[in-house]
Length: 307
Image (cartoon, rainbow, N blue to C red; front, top):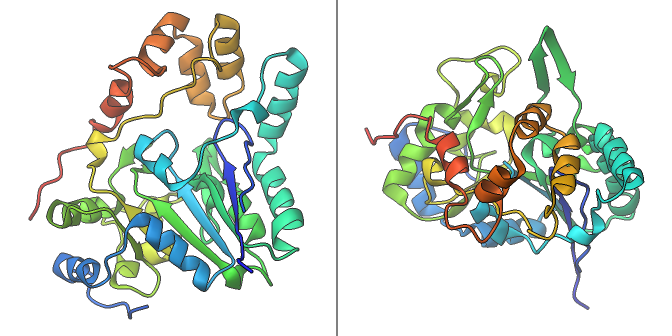
């Protein structure tokens, strides 16, 4: 009898869900890293699937709204998400305020305790387990994420955490930056193929940032963050954003409910000042110019050049 795994999707805007069925660390010089990729080629999809041979639960963390990431999971059941009435909106908002806690509780009760294999697809911030995230404002406040909550005995030995390539957010400088000073992106200028690869136990584990900020992701080595990583040949500066579903945000009332309930409060404030028609023109599907705004966001990063 074939074994079937769950594929769990926790998108950023709502708890949407679908149920479906090593090498030693060494030299972190770029030539050694490129050699490792060449010796261990694997497509992103093959890489993720292969991890189920040795782990029950694979966590796949994504940046949010990056279009080429979608090929790694099936379609999202948006009919499970509804902001249409005040009651429904209040229910979704209540969930968002306890988002990580609710995800962790459901995951433990329905997946971990019964021992059901699963691919958990969620925002990379929610899937973090091996390091701590902080909100930096007036001081620093630790954010306990879903991954932190479930990464416990006896489950953690059967967990594997993979991140999809995207800019890191440096809470020290409050800016998007290239991971590890652009080392991965420079490698891709030579490699030019999509790849999934191990971080833990590989030469990549020792990569660090030259300038580290306290309470920031830059304070950690690559191997302290993730077990595996996925990169696409598309440069970050050319990343295209997701298109929204026209029927889901089709009126000004829908749009108001949308930005009111965004977990990202800065984005909520920004969209509250955006006219509905401008939002539709910039972010909704069917428009050939869609994605340019998202591209421009990452174009603020400097050009990556090979050394």
